[in-house]
Length: 196
Length: 196
Image 1: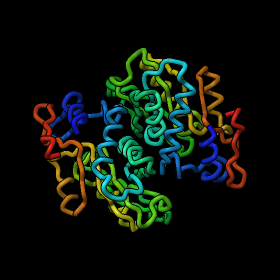
Image 2: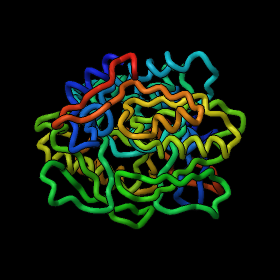
Image 3: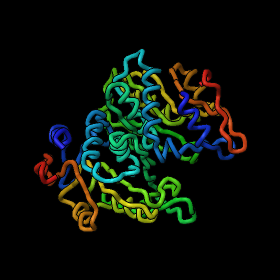
């Protein structure tokens, strides 16, 4: 997606070999015009199939999930909540374990069962795809619910980490609007638009 | 705000004396059409003064902050990040301490200094106002930045807790779109529309 690629190249930067900093427009300060375009791009990518709801994970997935829901004519958004502790005694929630490579910690993500009916067509949206743990956790919850993953829409994929390849191999339709292929002295390198 | 009051009465419920459950439309599952109207209501309430950016706190303030920013013609949104630990050694962030009465814990909220320039007119938006700790923390960060609080927009105020009174006494212009005055056997009671 052109506007996102331009924002990444103009405003983003890299730290070390694998940290992509775009919090000036995507996950701390939010560029609302850009995010509205991102929502329209996800609608364009997934409009050919039924989508009943948008699923994401707090906190930085919420913005793109909302603008995507708007582009689909105001679908409901559900955001999974993160917790350090399991809630195995709570029968009202679906839960999955998610390992964070960044923080080297295990988290649990959960969704109230009420809001994810069996048979729903669920579009998963997130800001980043790196090792794929968050998306796998969300997809696992969709499976628990007896619902269907309509697709996985990602704002920025880290092409040099394995999540995208893994999810595609598992048969998910993954659409990334921009793919960072590497970091060279703080400068972010992007895949050609056609390879995104 | 009529649609919000109707959603609260129809879908929301109370637990015990002070827990207001509206996560079926406001802070777990998001009703995007309702949230878009909420954004327009905040624009209506604060359009008479300069607003340069919307400030909120992760995770459940983000949705209303985004739709408010859209209603103001795509202003930037900044969401404060929560942490259990202080970052006093990090000179790049503003930080405030926030006590959670619900969880009986202290949290720190922080914002990168870059995104909050001195002199900015900042509209604070949040989903709930109870004891006012979150809004006070956000206002404290705005003060640290040498910026100005243009107003505080709240989706649902718990009128039976002291936050709203405290903030108004301090001179902030607080606009709540609905005010819950009490809980009677699980049923939420609302203030008359004119008193919201």
